[in-house]
Length: 70
Image (cartoon, rainbow, N blue to C red; front, side, top):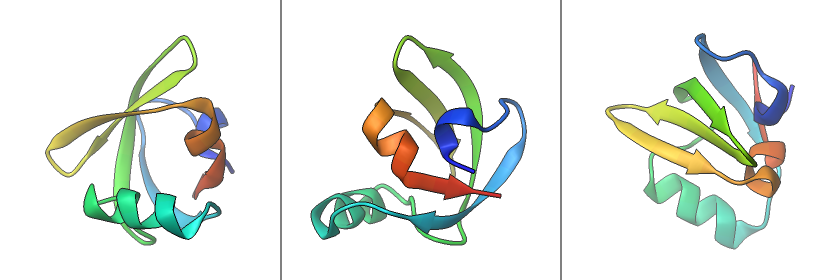
């Protein structure tokens, strides 16, 4: 399921990132890679706020729709 509709408060594993190579490289530099884990902390407007490792990241609608989690 896309990150945008995933339930908040659960640890989720990234199974696919369906975006451009440029965006994938940027996400990789932030620690967002296939098989990594994240937790959705909240949603604020069009942003999805997640905890990745020890960082908090906010993803806009386009990016959160391109990250698939299980």
